[in-house]
Amino acid sequence: NAGVTQTPKFQVLKTGQSMTLQCAQDMNHEYMSWYRQDPGMGLRLIHYSVGAGITDQGEVPNGYNVSRSTTEDFPLRLLSAAPSQTSVYFCASSYSFLGVRYGYTFGSGTRLTVV
Amino acid sequence: AQTVTQSQPEMSVQEAETVTLSCTYDTSENNYYLFWYKQPPSRQMILVIRQEAYKQQNATENRFSVNFQKAAKSFSLKISDSQLGDTAMYFCAFMKHDEYSGGGADGLTFGKGTHLIIQP
Image (cartoon, rainbow over all chains, first blue to last red; front, side, top):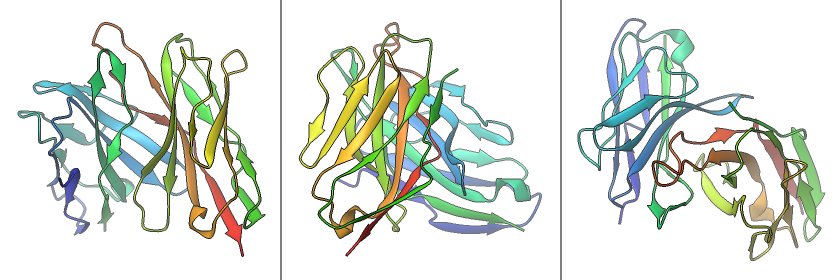
């Protein structure tokens, strides 16, 4: 049982390049979300999904796209990388049972540097 | 929108002591969930404890317990018999309960964290 798997763990991009951060979970969780962590800022929500085919914006969505074609996968796309997107990115998944929500399980993160 | 405030950027205690980390939040929601997450130097986010706002009983997990004061919008974490392995960043987080989607639809709102150092 791998939990939440993020790839790659480290990435360096040039300004203007595009890339996709991969996130996969094998727990059949319906809820998934992406966060970025910057020094002194805690974690901030980028996008979230409540099930396959359903996504919505979080607090800091500009410059990022997501899709959720399957329950397992929730990739995050950077369309045109900017130095301000240098950060650590976390993917997380969660579930509900009998209408009660449970805590998010996090991946190990991707450290992205845009130069 | 909701906000989460952690007013202690850093705390340091001796091993085996008890320490309390503070968290306050602001929301207009009545039903929601509160969490404490631990982030050690490995960067992994680890769920420490979870509280359902509609339950008055404070959650406990071994050495970790919370003091949940709904009217005051306060959610502090108490760590008893602190250990060196408790050294980490601790984040308080909020998640609303969405009755129509079956339990919540907007991810987590985090505080900025408290860096806890356990001294030997």
